[in-house]
Amino acid sequence: MKNLVLFFFAVGMSLISLQAQNHVYEEKMGEVLESMTAAKDLESWQNILNQLERIAKVESSAWLPEYYRAYSHLQLGRIALGNEDKETTIEHIAAAQNSLKVAEEKAEGPNSEIAT
Picture 1 (tube, rainbow, N blue to C red):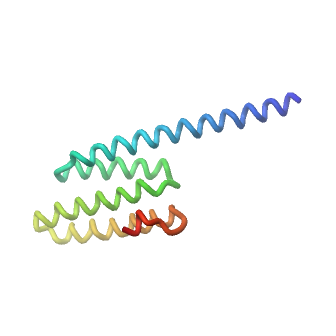
Picture 2 (tube, helix red, strand yellow):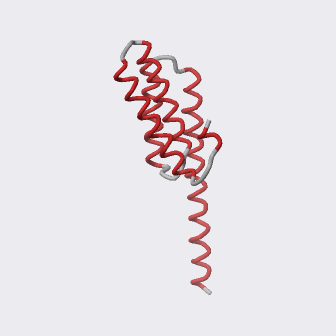
Picture 3 (cartoon, rainbow, N blue to C red):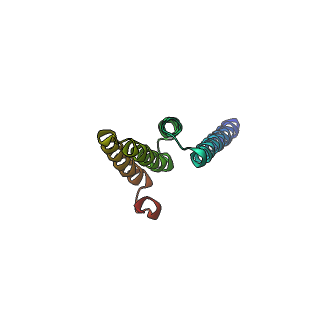
């Protein structure tokens, strides 16, 4: 009986821990998405990209950080194109394509948001 109680206690604690981790992920993603609305220059988009890379490392099964990493790379590529830096633009486009590929793999199947 004691083992059964300990088992359910351990399961309950692990569920609480998972829920807390999910809350932190949602909070951090919300902060990043909010900062995207105000981002206008190279430095702010690079900071957003760095934050998304950290989130993607922690939440290795989530596809949204990869999706928004692709978007950030496209924005950085757009800025580089405006500065007539074609080589950097091509690098960011390739990185965006790679991030979308990773997002599709993590989504495990067709996802209309990634396809558009």
